[in-house]
Amino acid sequence: TRSDKLHKHAGMQCIRDIFEVAKIIIPINLDNIHWVCACINVEQKRIEYYDSMYRNNHAFFSNMRRYLHDEFDDKKVMMYRNYNLNLNEWTNVFNDRCYPQQNTSCDCGVFTLKCAES
Image 1 (tube, rainbow, N blue to C red):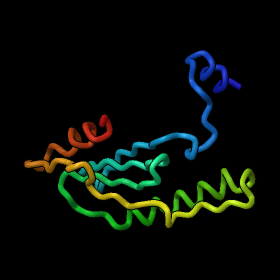
Image 2 (cartoon, one colour; image 1 turned 90 degrees about the vertical axis):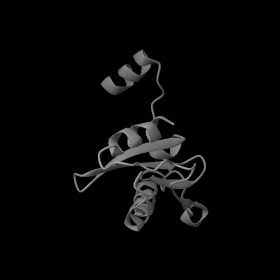
Image 3 (spheres, rainbow, N blue to C red; image 1 turned 120 degrees about the horizontal axis):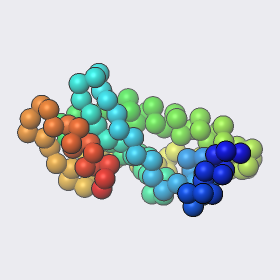
Image 4 (cartoon, one colour; image 1 turned 135 degrees about the vertical axis):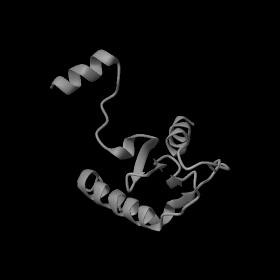
């Protein structure tokens, strides 16, 4: 396929599903006024949420757990019929690594990009 040719040309591996990568970085815009950074850390079984204004978002964690469950059912259940994704092994992480707090109301995009970079 064209996608396979592009991956081969770029020297990239073809990834079949999200469980084959170490991390998935997700920039999120909240109500068109604030940016936060999230990460599905597959390798460490962590769902991470970083907000420079330190506002916890409980709905995010439940939505990501549902997404992981649905994604596993869609992509992996045929390959691993005797294995279930145990989300009890996964940890919710809110503002780990001493994530800095912004001092103004307009710097959230920069904080989000720096978080994604690290």
